[in-house]
Length: 366
Ligand code: G6P
Image 1 (cartoon, rainbow, N blue to C red):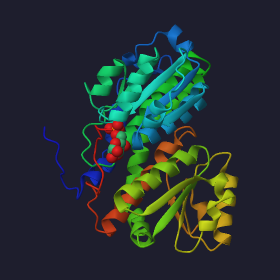
Image 2: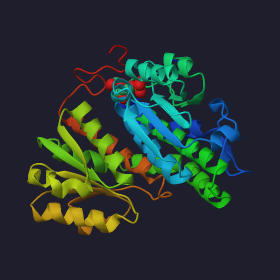
Image 3: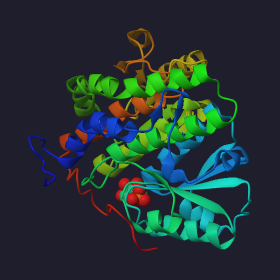
Image 4: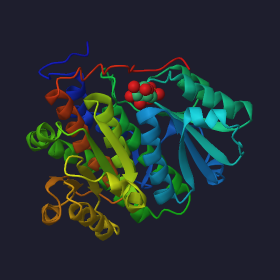
């Protein structure tokens, strides 16, 4: 069946709204309730090989890189394997040390991004093991890796990634569960994460139902010259991806910064016309994040808090609430309102949302 816009004004809007179904598909056939783990047959790693992994290095470009950063966080937190993500081009040009007990993971929605493909080849040339987390079946990166996880997110037409970003994050949550259960993650924690994963589609639907409220904030804030996005640990990648989306489609300057670093420089930027988007998960860093909000308010800055409860209203000017999941998975949900914020800011400003200037869906040249 042809992929059609239907009643949606833009592909980006359609694809944001397709996320519950995309997540559902990414999970289909991959949950093993009996052993509280994830089945990832395409990975091609035996339990012994899996146990021998000492480090995970994730490579990708743009939103794929940022989804990889969220993936690294999930792998390290859930499976307790040291994990990092790096932009694929930076990696391939710095003559990286390739280690035999490191699992390299190439992330790409299109499977055709030149720098990511070149990074895969660099790993392989030095004898490293690389698997793909890829959207397009049979694409160059999928073929080069030969094993990995497909997203099953369906086509994505809009240049900016939304549902493939979320589906990639879910694929990494499955990978983290799988790696964790071969190591020290308990069956109880495995079951807890599985329940969390299964709750995601319904919770994303709930967030999408609050679109009007997000549109209202976006319409008012689109007139500012730029925004600062801040978050700590689980919120930091969410802030980075939110800022990238705003740059890509609304052409507004958006800088993402770890909230903890604000006082070491970016606090000088705070003014009433450069609002701050603060990502505030309900975790052990909540009070520190509220401290950051207070620091911004004390300097006459405006704050939009994205978190899990309306109590944030006591600190911030605007609040976007998303449902709570498990702490490890909350960053997936916290990113959704920021996609809609960027989308509606772009629409307010009259930009070509699906084909932002100077950008291409897939960059197959250097
Ligand atoms: C381009 C797109 C980005 C995308 C990046 C990586 O720059 O504009 O939206 O994140 O490529 O694409 P990939 O297909 O490798 O995920």
